[in-house]
Length: 303
Ligand code: RIB
Ligand code: CA
Image 1 (cartoon, rainbow, N blue to C red):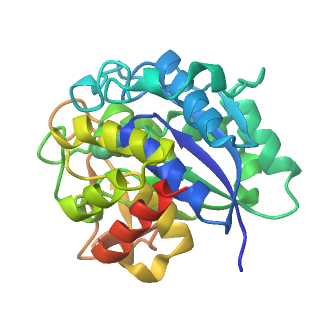
Image 2: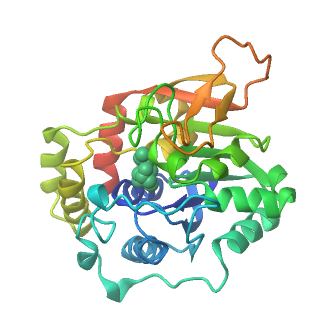
């Protein structure tokens, strides 16, 4: 079986938790670090939530705190979707007594250290605003050759969930997204075109409730409040795009990011007519095998 050394850079966030659960449930992933970034909720909460899920799973990986705000724009938490604690109001049931230790190093230093010390290229799954990743690539360009690919949950082509054309992760930090998409690093993008199809039915929710184990109970609870505002479990797509690309439809495209404030802030757009005569800079994922996704989510909590 192929092994994927993996850094998860995230803003937990309910669907970020499921991205971590999916990576943990698949033996082909070797999770090296979980790094927090400000996004769904503030950095102290996303960091605490990363420690909670890593502790709950007994993950033997580094947990590190990342950027507390976007490069230029202001923070804009999504507490309406993820709750004031970022976990649907259920942070308290994860077990503070199992909190994973927080690294003394920042997310930026941890990501650089892991990449530079690895004897094989490392995958990065980015499921929050791309602030940490942009800082990493800007401060330490030497890491670029050490990155196998950055698999991003973010953006969308002709679709948005903050404005009609901007998705949350890119809207929050469009300058960071612009830096990443112009870095030359191999990119995979699971935007809303594919992630809005990443949903569960009552069948899966009932199945999860029938497992009667801690992880499944917590998963069902945090989903119950989240699903009332967003039925799509976006972030696990970025994990599965690495391990199971054949379960998706994708095209290599030239993608750019709009950094202007306003309705197009963070908009990701594709040169469909190739008028810019540019080589593709991103593998854009457009569709997912829904049954595969549903089975994977159910399996990820049956532990
Ligand atoms: O637009 C959805 C994305 O924004 C997901 O990553 C969700 O967790 C939020 O970060
Ligand atoms: Ca997220």
